[in-house]
Length: 464
Ligand code: FAD
Ligand code: NAI
Image 1 (tube, rainbow, N blue to C red):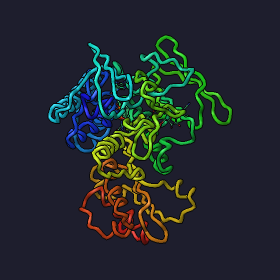
Image 2: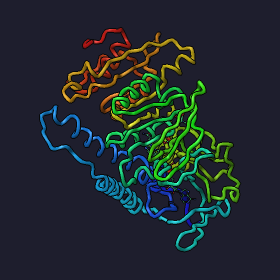
Image 3: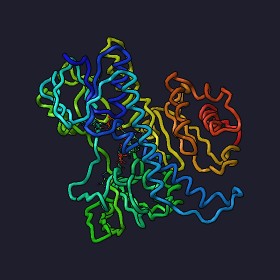
């Protein structure tokens, strides 16, 4: 055999799996169909979206809050071309970083479409076609945006997140179908740069995977940015008309709305991507939703083939894919790794940010579990007042009898980084009182975490 491990797909699942395999002494190769490594996350996902979120946040601050801070500037103007160029530079640094890591770990990289010939042989269809043999395969081919059958994506006016990261002008009116993570993040980018943003969401709430209080809080903030929400609306038609896009939707009360915008972002979720793999040549099974079926060891129905990341069940998140990459490498090496899927945090990088781990209040109600809630608003924090970031709250859910923390939900400045403390607390099965009795530096946003824990444990926050 040419290799012990061949990884197909170089996203955060695939490249991390390859590195861990190489660290564990396995002769490893990785196949990527695009010219750059890093997958969705580095090229058209996490990294470029955060680059634009940061740039647009600076613009928004320059336009709205500099003055209050005592900084007088002329009215700032958006230079979208430069913003997109900077984003491209950030992407380049990151994908080059993965190249470097492959070299450092002596992982052979093949650029081309990987297709199974049989369960031990992969054909790489690139500039030239090669066949490589391997003892084991890790499939990490990720996901692609989903679309409704009646929507024709022209990728110019009717677009997915990929095109939304490359626009040449700031939309006048951006219509977003789907009030999930992508819709709220990319809607925020263009909302801050001056677009009117309308969100058409099928359910009666935005970011439906999160605790409902977080969705309400974020919706309030985004309304402040000028977003219009059409919740409980089902899109029935999307048509391009010259430089406009007309979106029709029907509310759950049967009312019809018609929206006219110049761009329409379709962000209704993503689906696993296995095109071109020719799974049947290896006998690998996918389920009815196109996800590759795996057991608790992330092994497919074919004993030498594993699958990880967006192409298998579970949340479609880069850090989940990474954990699974490490898990599979260590399992193959004979170790006994573990992933606590319950404690994979979720983050929405809007302003304010939203971050969550563990159970939501709705899930606890559904389970019939007795719980306590502790909340603390950002506006009561000295640190938040100093920076004027007073929107949001920390909410901690704890077991009524044992005080064990069952869920941490944060909407507010720096929530994305703060949630790590919630993960640590829950991983070690801390009680709310454990958190409440730890010293938290003053003045920090983390004091809201301590205060929410105080509120959960004995309903005795200090500062409200
Ligand atoms: P991917 O990253 O999709 O990588 C799969 C790779 O496999 C691709 O490079 C593809 O070209 C390659 N491939 C596919 N088929 C073949 C084949 N047959 N042969 C060779 N190569 C193949 N997640 C977060 O955790 N945080 C975020 O902030 C975040 N932001 C996001 C923003 C956007 C706009 C989007 C779209 C996604 C975001 N995500 C985020 C989700 C995250 O990008 C994915 O969960 C993650 O990339 C999944 O990693 P993966 O390795 O499973 O697959
Ligand atoms: P999503 O699953 O987050 O949201 C999709 C939304 O569209 C849901 O609210 C859903 O109810 C709604 N929807 C579905 N069909 C609809 C219809 N016909 N009409 C109106 N609304 C409809 O999916 P999204 O935003 O496309 O993101 C895809 C994935 O990418 C996410 O699951 C997430 O895991 C990942 N991602 C993660 C990010 C992060 O971690 N910060 C950022 C961006 C993406």
